[in-house]
Amino acid sequence: MSADFDPVHKGHVKLIDKARQLADKKGDEVVIYLNKGYSANHAPFFANFNARSRMALEAGADRIVPIEGLHHRLTLAYTVPIRIAMMIEDGVVDYVDAADVSTDKIKKYSSSFAKKGIFSGIPRNLPNRNVIRWFAVNEFLYKKYNRKLKFHIIPEYKIHGEKISGRFIRREIIENNMEIPESAAKLLPDSTVQILEEELKKGNIPGERNITVLTKRLNTYSRAKMINIAHMNADAVSALVKGRKYTNEDQIWASLRMAGYGPVLTRLVISAAEEDVTRREVFDLIKKYEKDGIIPPDQKVENVIERAWFVASKSDEGMPSSDAHKMFRKGVRIHEKPLYTFDGGMHLRSFEIPSLEDGMDATLYVDKNDRLCCDVRAKDRKIKSPLKLPAKLVTYLRLLIDSQFIPLSAQLVEKEEGWRIRVFVGDYKN
Image (cartoon, rainbow, N blue to C red; front, side):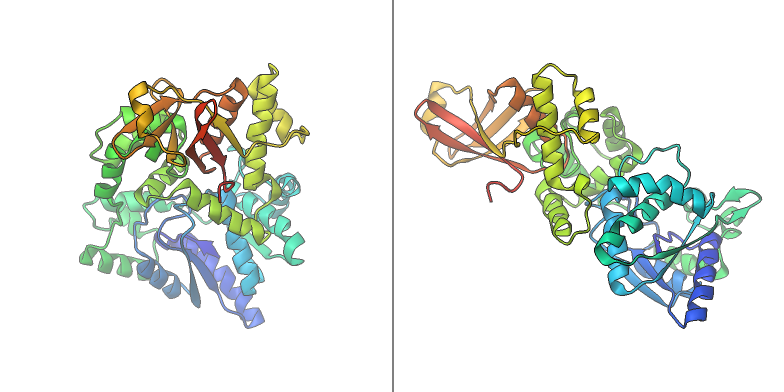
């Protein structure tokens, strides 16, 4: 199994019991791939990794494998392929999960996503969306490994017709002054209750964000520095700057929701900001797994760049960008390759020119008036200027900024016609 188990409840015990039956028949182990650091939904854990490991072992698991370094950097569309690939490479044969719908229906729902090789944007109206994603990825990775996990889906365990919710259990404990009320205890095995009580007594629960570090960054980072945080788009940066000064996480949530971020993406971008995860860091991580053949073609970074170029090109011809996006998803392409480097003009004042040197680094950002701008830090001054670009390149660059993980770098270059900002897309400069 792959899980958060935060905490292990009676529904999880049913999963472990099923795994135990399978393992005992084959003489195998029940192994839990347990998320560490951040949950699959990009949040800090209520109970720490050691406590959750003990809960799983007490519930009948044989071994725990930590999964770390993923969930504050990547969306589920990327982490699920990585986790399944890890399991297959480790020799895992059977995988146990729970769902409200039959295995046949899950296979039917997942087949189209497996064929497309894209695991984001699964409609919210589909039941058990994450199980569907796991099925689809499992089918996709069969091409690489020539083997796949055998899924065993059991009904979701319910009490009085209600699915057990870890979120409900955590909330009940918090609202009961960090003591376990009967409403939560009845949903937990005795071993989990005991471990939770020990952790509560030690003051280890709940796990929390480093709000001091997080608020300091979001209160002080420039627009140029903030846009370099992974999963930040221009609207998010503008909303966060406008909402300063932050003292708690709820205020940050309010700003990101104003920028159109949903709950999952909000948690991800807050976790990325807390850990100071850069676009370059996420880009390089995705490229690594691309090289290993784990990331599907439609989710590769080059595809994101190509889509931005396609939409910019079609928009330049007068097509609405929404229509261009639909065309690209349907497989329509153009012969012209994306530009990975190009020059833009600047607005300079005469007294700023003596401070400039060829090769100086520049940063890109979107200002409060929604203009693409650059920032050059000379030895004696900071120089800010709007970028002068053709409309097509403006659209292209803005789409790359809003991609949330394509890194953009820039440097000052001196040309016969004057000073220019040379923009580099992805790892072109490297």
